Image (cartoon, rainbow, N blue to C red; front, side):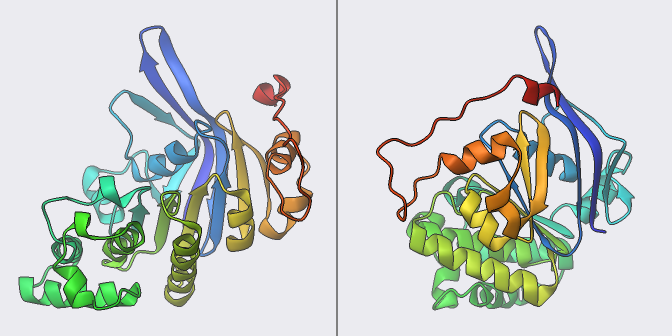
Length: 276
């Protein structure tokens, strides 16, 4: 099992006391594709970042178990975490415009990630960077390697981000809203690319998204989060038959071309969901 999360709780220090943002989340992930869906603020990204210990200093993390491939993340040293973070578990962030270094070329950034985990000469890293850019289906990878982020389209920038994460051959890929800044056509291309890479390399994938249909078609399992809790977990193929009223509410809010409606449904939240 790559990821084991049992009763994870994340709280932040505020002037009025501790505010709990993740409340008792339990998940497991093997070499499969797990999607985490829910509204903004439901705790999806915090859960993923807790696994890599990438939370701000005012965060308090507690769990009965929080482990990556048997390593206890809560008690691991910073040296142990550096061996996991980036090397064995890669994180693809939401928008390449803000994630890539604007004063470094795409090739230099991929090469830097490759050398950080594999060592080697600058020349070898440069060759590896061009090869990685080719693996993520970038046409003319040598030219793109010499381009700066502002010279790349959104889809191209996201491919560069994926190439950086693939440089050390990770076992787990965490994709935090990797397609939200892209149009529908490029979004489909990026998802096909990720699916191919995950299948070919035998990695685990944790996909965080607001898009229920996307996750339902792309992932093996889906966990639905509400107010810091997992309220429902099911096979992706069964998402249309979800039972929890929150999941049903999210599905009912989606527009459908096959059944157009004059007015979309509105989510009605039950206070009992917070205590469930």
